[in-house]
Length: 246
Length: 257
Image 1 (spheres, each protein chain N blue to C red):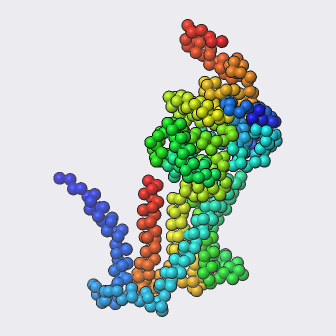
Image 2 (cartoon, each protein chain N blue to C red):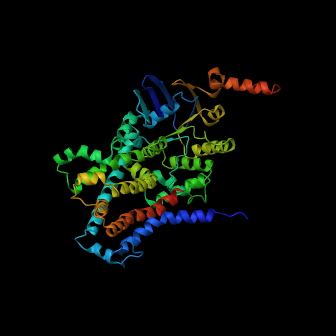
């Protein structure tokens, strides 16, 4: 396993937010994690990114124990629901930000950023400031800024939560394309059922701090706790003539 | 026909606003102006020439005030910015914020009287360092309160993002936090400079007359009933704030709007 999480526990005061979290993920795969608000998804991602210290448990990345490593040494990028583009930097400089931190030579930075701008379909926007872009374009820049640093693991915390349905769909397609192109290993947290099924190679459900990873998507769909059955029943009642896919 | 009063009222308001400043400049150029004379006996640059005379000491007061205010504004803005971060993310944030209001519970003169014993013991009574420290005690809490709104969850997320992108704490500060706070830093510098520049009560007690800032000088001239020098020193007193206001408008407000 590329990522191994073993018995991670985290409490805030009296409340246990993450309970005995254990799972694994192969390299270049995406694990979708579905869960309602406040179930501990964000805390779990922040623990993996080194932004929150767990009370107990271990995290191994590519066989190496990373419990004591600082966030900047983990090569794990955490992407928020908000795009968090730096308002004082142009689109080009936002994408180049991680490379500039590593003091990469200027020519190399320029070549990589130009390539990324092309992959993100943002040609001609490089000199603009973040406030001049649409929500979808901003989120694309945010992806580019993270992926260009070639992270070992990408943590996405409801990245399309603030986008409209059409933009959301286009962004889902773009992410699938980028994930394949740059061979990304990622955890994709969402509270949207359809998005969880679409985006993940594997799928998991988080409830009150406990994570259940399903062996396949069918297992996830059949589990009444995930809400998929309710969704199917709803659409079945609305369109009585249609056949139940399961 | 209905009369439109708006232009007249606006002109009157502008004239009333500008009158004290224009009158100050005129008064600084006048001398020997006694009742019932309608015009001053002398009108020229004589008073301004005396600025350079060492016995009046206006230039030295102006330079001393500039030095004190620049020191106070620089130190309190930078330290306030850095320490407000620790206060904002501290578990006892509310209690610490409550403490920052403490210096404003007392009038500056009363605060100075309370502090004078400690300043005397520390050898800070009647010297420039003492005045800078005393004024810092007023401007630093102001700076802490001013920057408390900057350290939001969003700012924290920016910082964390820099860390996960491979950046250090120093890089997060230099490359993200300082540029983000640039406008607020300039406004805070401007405000703390003004607080220090016009500070009278604390300065007069801790400085014990030995540290003669321009504000102290203005009050001395007014006490001596020397209106012409008083007006002159007032002109000098408002000059740096006007320059700062212009710079703020040009480089900060226009970009914030």
